[in-house]
Amino acid sequence: MGLLNLIEPNVVKVPLVSTTKYEVIPELLDILVNCGKVSNRDTALNALLERESLGSTGLESGIAVPHAKTPAASALTLAIGIAPDGIDFQSADGDPSRLFFLLLAPPDQSGPHIEALAEIARLTRAPAFLRALSRAESPGEVVELLNE
Amino acid sequence: MSGPIRNILINVDGSEESLTAADYAILLAGAVDARLFACYVVNTRALQDLVRSRIFLEVEEKEYSRDLEADADRYLNHVRKAGNEKGVSVECLKRSGSVHQELLRIVDEESIDLLVLGELAHVRSRRDEFYDESERAMRSAGCSVLIVKDSDRVDELFQRGM
Image (cartoon, rainbow over all chains, first blue to last red; front, side, top):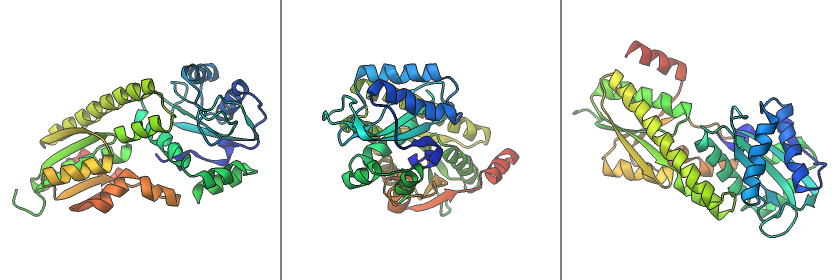
């Protein structure tokens, strides 16, 4: 399953209201909980925080990709959030993160999980595209940009 | 084994589409008396990409690599069993690396004359076309390629034993 198949306007939040790393993860997770894509919020949150405790998923270029395997997700699922002012996510280059991709996968779907993460990794190598995405002002605009 | 199709390769990646294609390839191999190879490629290239881009830590790369190895065994066993059910012997190959490159390598090594792939994902973005492994294999393979569609019909055919 391609990354784009996971993206609908209802899993995109623009702008995010959080201002810290440990607020933004629950805010993104709640998008998926509210869409009925996560059965147990606490289990999923613990999995995300446990992964984050091993090392920040804040990459370069203002992107962060919090992710985890958890039985609380019955299928591969993705939330996207944009924080126009940036959030300190202890990223690799020290810059604030503006574009968040939160990905959850059931433990038995490693293949699709890896493919989706690899697609996000490829996006990180397109700086002009990322700049346009970070400037998006609505979920519809984000979906439209990703579908171009 | 004297017809135009002597060696068939099916790519199994764990998707529903690839498993449907495997069922069809089993029926086809039985019908034309061809050798059937099933291959699962552990996509270590994607794992390495994830480490390079710092999305994965090395500990995650190892963990997911183990998961994929287990998936490979599980899905290849599934196809082998399905073949046995229909009296078709399936030669299972587990490889690692870049999916489309490994498929092309097997096409050469085993003199494959028909590569069978599951239905391709609907292309929703120009970026998809460059990275879909099945699509790349379809475009680059030196042999004929069959894309299996209509899973309901294939399922019915398989159940009927045709």
